[in-house]
Image (cartoon, rainbow, N blue to C red; front, side):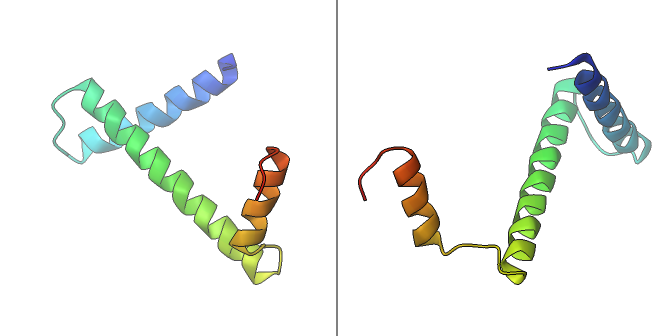
Amino acid sequence: MSTQSIQTELREFVQFASQRVTRGEECSSLEELVQQWRSDSEYTAAVADVRHGTEADAVGQAKPVDEAFAEIRNDLGMTP
């Protein structure tokens, strides 16, 4: 990971932790804050992925699941 990526990630965590503490939310340790931040980050990324898929489908860029899986199997050299 590049230094710039680490700095960005650190800024995001500090902002997240500061907001939680300022709002008076319960947290028993720094580790708990890190776990909450990771969980929130993963949730946000998953929601963004779903939105992207929905938007792609709306403009006709999505493939049926069976077609996509067949393509993946083919790329991996697996037989259908």
